[in-house]
Length: 514
Image (cartoon, rainbow, N blue to C red):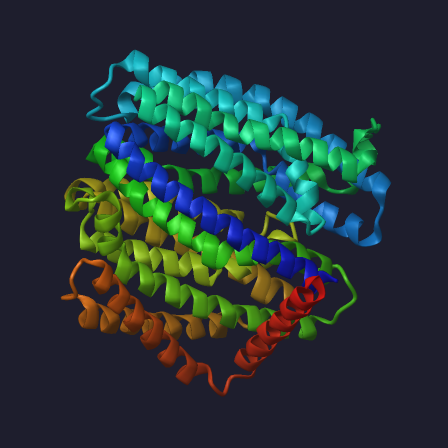
C-alpha cells in the first residue's frame, strides 16, 4: 500500500509540476511583453525578506509532521486531532508575529531595493500586498500537513493545479488588458488563499475529527518534547532563512534590482525542472520513509534501501546539473527572446554545481526530516548562514551575481555535512568518511561529464535544432558514463528492480481502468 501511495503521489506531483512549469514560462514571457522585467525583481526581493521573517514559524510544521507519522501508523485519531489543533492555534499566533515583524522590516525597503525606477510609495504597496498574502496563508495552510503525512499529497497538488490554472488565465488576461502590475499582483496573491480554503473543506470531510475542539495540556507538550524541539529547530529556521533568503537581497543591494530579475529567470527554470524531475518524485517518499522508519524493519534493511535511494539521487543530480550547464543559456535566450536576459556563463557553472550538491543529498534531507532532534546539526546550520552572507557580500562587488552564487555553493557544505553525519553515522551507524569520499569521487565524475558535454555542444546553434542536438548528447553521455560506473553495484540493480516493480504497478492500474 505504501509503494502504491508513494507512486500515486509522485506521478500526480510530476504531472502537476510540468503544467505549472509551462504556466510559469508563459507567465514570464508574456510579462516582459507588457511590463518591464524590473517588476519581477521587486517580487523576488520581497519574497526573500518574507522567507527570513518565516523564522517566526519556529519549525512547528516540521515538528508536528514527524509526530504525525507515528500516530498515523497506529491510526490514533485522538492524538492526530490534538496535534493538528495545537498546530492551528500556534499558526494563528505566528500570523500575528509575522505581521509585526513585517511592519518593522519595511523600514529597510529603501536600502535593499537598488536602482529602482519606481518611487518608494509604489514599492511599499507591493511590499504590503505580499505581506498580507503571507499572513493570510498562516491561518489555513496548516491543514496541508495532514494530507502530506498521510501520503495523500496528490490531493493538495490537484487543488493547487486547478486553482493556479484558473487564476493564471485571469491574471495574464488582466495584465494584457490593463498593463497594471498592482492589479496583477493582487490577483496572483489570492492563489494560495483560494487553494488553502479548498484544502480546509477537503480535510474537514476526510478527517471530521479535526473539526472538534481538543484540550491541550502542558503534559501533552512535555511528553512530545515539543518545546526543546522548537528551541533547537528555531536555530535551523533562522540559519536556513539567512542561507536561502539573502541571495536576492544581496544581489539587489550590491548588483542592482535588474540582476535580481535576471537571476529569477534561472531560478524559475531550475526550481521548475527540479520539481518536475526530482523533488516531486521524492517529496512523497518522505512520508513513506516516516512510516517505514517507525516500523519494525531492521536498520541493515533500511540502510540497503537508503543506499538504493542514494544511487537514484546521484543519477538524477548528475543529469540535472549537466543539463543546466548545457541548456540554461540557449533555453533562456529562446524563451525570453533576447541575449540581454542572460547572466554570465561563470554564473551558470557555479549555479549548476550548487544544484548538483543540493540534489544529490536531497534524499539525506528526507531521512533527516523524519527524526526531529534538531540539536544534532544546528551548529552546522549556523555556520552555513554566516558563510553565505560573508562570502556573498565579499564577492558580490568584484564578481557580481556569480560571486553571490559562489557564496551559496560553499555555504551549503556545512548543511550537507550536518545532515549526513546525523543520518549516516547517527542513525545507521556507518562511516561518514567513506560516504563523503564516495561522493567526492562522484562529484569529480559529474564535473568531467559537464566538461565533456560542454566541449561537444558549445558551438551548436541557438535554435530548436541546436537544442535537439544538445538534448541528444546530454541524454547519452552522462547516462553511459554513470551506467559504466554502477553496472556491478548491487544497489544500482536494486534501483532498477524498484522502478521496474513500480512500472508494473502502473501498468496493472492502467489495465484495470481499461
